[in-house]
Image (cartoon, rainbow, N blue to C red; front, side):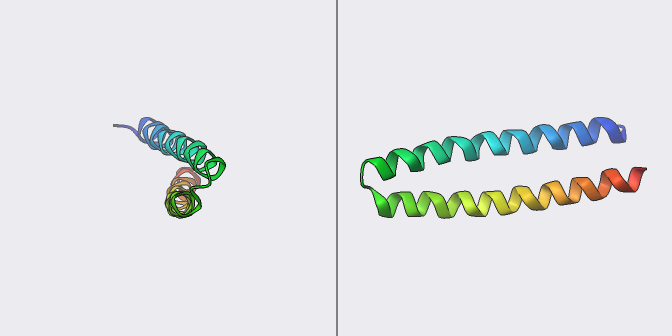
Amino acid sequence: MNSKNFEKEKIALIIRSLEVVVKKMADAREEISENETSKAFSTLNDIEGELQMISGQVAKLKFEIEGDN
């Protein structure tokens, strides 16, 4: 697999991860509206961890892309 296809695959994986986070954010909003604050707190903690992981993936991909130039 060439570098460009590999980068495209990584971007696609990051997008899918972001879609999952968006769904979880909607779940957290619903939990808050239903006064399930402890459940919402847990969901938001999960989201924070996932966003940190995604941030690391983006930083790594950026480094790889800049290294190719």
